[in-house]
Amino acid sequence: MRRFITTLAILLVVIVAGMMALVLLVNPNDFRAYMARQVEQRSGYTLALNGDLRWHVWPQLSILSGPMTLTAPGAQQPVVSAENMRLDVRLLPLLSHQLSVKQVMLKGAVVRLTPESDSQRPQNAPVAPGRSGSSEITQGWTFDIGELRVADSLLIWQQSNGEQINVRDVNLQLSQDSHRQAHVELSSRISRDQRELVMNLNADMDVNRYPQQLNALINQLDYQLTGADLPQEGVKGQAKMQFSWLGDRQAFSLKEIALNANDSQLSGNVSGTLTGRPQLDIDLRAPMLNMDSLLGLADGSSDGQQAQSQRAGAAPVIAQRAEHDNSDSPLNAIDGKVKLAVDTLRWRGMDFSQVALDASSREGVMQLARFSGKAGNGSFSLPGSIDVRAAQTAVALQPEISAIDVAALLKAFSLPASLSGDLSLKGNFTGTGLTVAAFKRTWQGSAMLNLENAQIAGLNFQQMIQHAVERSNSRVKGTDNAAAKNDLQQIKGGATLDNGLLTFNELKGSSPVLNYGGQGRVNLPQQLADITFGVTVTKGWQGDDELVKRLQQTPVPLRIYGPWSALNYSLQVDQVLRQQLQDEAKKRLKDWADRNRNGDSSVQKLIKDL
Image (cartoon, rainbow, N blue to C red):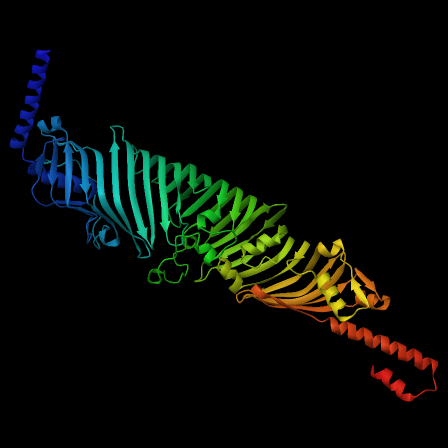
């Protein structure tokens, strides 16, 4: 045991002595020119190391440098700059005059992906020949980086439209083996427009044929997006997928996607090419897609307080974006196809099933060949097109709805749920904008509608008319029957929409106890209504036979008007009763005149006046 301990002590002394001798005998600044030339020869970039290089021996033999920069040819700003850099090197190759870098670590680095940091080739510059072999300076040296670490760093990315995205707190750990199988761990956060995205990535990559081909397996991607105009808890979830890149064809693919976002799930494949005009092919399936949860909307809410209560709050006025003009819309930059199959979809409090979307986009115009689904016992189909080539999004839809719950539909569009029943509709609408607010202000079109099992909340036409007649005339009264309490109606007619003004041209309704027709208009932005009906109560009368017969054949004018929150109605029963009295008086005078043909001529004149 004593010999073993002595042997270990001697070995430790030899290692420490060797490292001390290495520090004293080998000057790390001798590698400065070599590293700069190696970087320039292999990539064309210029590596600048400022300050002296020095050894760091514990716990890893390393070379420490002061400020460093890495600059592309002809660039105005460096691609990478850092206050310090650490190179972990292997000991044995160093003893044989070889520099083998085990790990490169940058702390507090700034990575710029901007036009100023991009390489610039001088005008009329000759094309450089293919890279030749190693120079005399590099003969006998090898260069190998097994690991790269970037800690507490910043990435500045400037998009094509000039806007910059700052990726902060970048922590990257990249390692690869001799077969060029790499492992990546990345965490960062992005703050923009009062929103923040935090993500953590764990992936394995095959870079053996890079840049011709790159394959990656994203084992786990955790993310959380919080901030203005998002749900209180944000949008968070995990993702897994397989990624591949073909450099020669500029093609990529995402396979076996498994994505969770709050309580929604997506799976499928995405592929595309980036040559010329980019092409994208999306084929996804969702067992559950809850748009209310993703958008932070309460059931049937819009942009009002009910929706705001479900969100983290709107951005301050000073941080509001400029007016959207479609200049940066993906549809203007990318062509492709989208297929989406959703088993269960929730939107503004409405639940849909078997939703299918089949769309294609070309030159800024998306064609909705199919957008259909089911809701309860009904179904919907919304084919059409979306055009983003102009400043304002132009939408054209040909909706076809069958037996959809109209109360839920009205609530979804932030309209009073004053109607219930099963709505069937077929129409043609055009407008600008895809929001509910835009539909209520800037859309036009017309539709034919049919409402089965309809009831108007708070309004029973039969009871209203019967009670009004009873108060005006004691000769008749209405009966309180079951049909009056459960007055299910069928309503048919046409409607036109013109920039927020919804006009009903010829509404016709019927039920077992009444018939009516009507017309009028509804102002959607101002939330005002003005509709006039002519209601004929065909059953439920008792009393004077002549008056009952008259009431069963005569429409009673009924006007409903005013703001949605406090609707008024005007029922003109007196006109019907007055006409009945006039007709009855005229008939009696005529009978008297027929019995007294030689009577006073003033009676004949009175009959004519009536």
